[in-house]
Length: 30
Image (cartoon, rainbow, N blue to C red; front, side, top):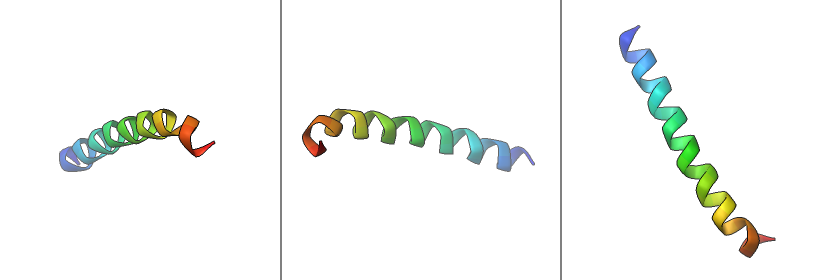
């Protein structure tokens, strides 16, 4: 269960990074 929580936290962090990238490239993509 501890591992699952750790993975969940990592997933959230990765998502945050991806969101920032999308926002940064959003203007270019748009």
